[in-house]
Amino acid sequence: MKKQTLINYLYFFIFITAIGCYCNTSIISNQHVDTLSHSNINMVGNDRDLHGCIPSAGYQWSELQQQCIRSFELPLKLLNQAKTFGAYVCFSADSSKAEVFSNEGNWILVKNTTKEFVKMNNDSVEVKLNKNNKTWILYISLGDILYKEEI
Image (cartoon, rainbow, N blue to C red; front, side):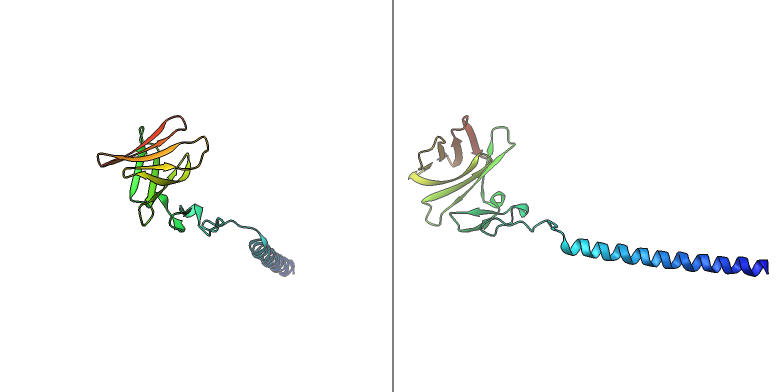
């Protein structure tokens, strides 16, 4: 009789434990699904700027090309003297304007001479892009920053 009572208690304990585990798993699963469906999760690539470009994927708006571009994929890459930062340049279809992308800022430059592009607005930053002996050089007056094309 004692043996049968002990076995009944054991079956009862296993039954209660199984129900408890099932209920706990069900509650946790429902909370997890509820949390995922109602939270503001910022997924990589889910960020878009005003033009629809995805900055986390390296895209930014080009005024000259009127589309999202990756400036680091542009064919004209200029490096600073320490070769730690790059400036990237694209040209308009008629080559009358150049757009510069750098750590210091982005600018639209207008062709001034056959070998020089300059920024036309009158703020405190002077930006020039010119070609010397097949090499492009970018001058930015913010502390005499100079970028040069590597050939």
